[in-house]
Length: 230
Image (tube, rainbow, N blue to C red):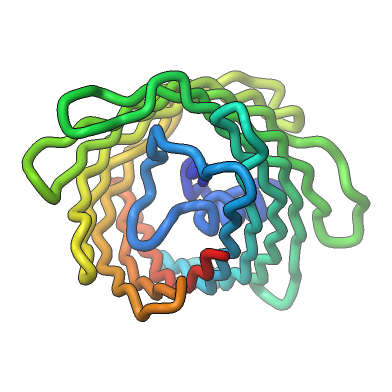
């Protein structure tokens, strides 16, 4: 599924960042070039906590469901709630991805990912907030190891600004998977993250990840997630 930057900039972008995190499959943050097959679906849920020195901790609850609709395309719907200092913000998103070239052992995969996000700040109502489009590439580095790269554009309505967003990640494809990512935009210091995921069977998997923003003060985020494929 889709995976934009975890910003959590209080208050309006909080829900956008939380929802973006839920879109990552397992411990990985960077988007992949493969799309769900027609009729295949995934439900992902996650909870997270972000903290930095001198500011209240931010807690998040997220859920994303996506299905393959044919034409090498998957579409999804996401919801997130973030809470800080006794206040909460909500967000919803339409998420999609279309594979242009399917990845395999001898070929780089290419795709386009896109999303439309709306948020509801404390005491407010839902308003369209962010539109994002990214190019996605996936390549096998070694047997059992994949490299993913994303480069895209996002527009913030409230900020009245455009941003370039980028992601670079590597992951293993074992039953016990590990992943590492670096990602960011052209307006802030990048993030680095690492995670581990485990396939439990029956289409169920679980993951744990840790992310750190390379800025002052340091911002740290922990995320616990689960996925059901059906």
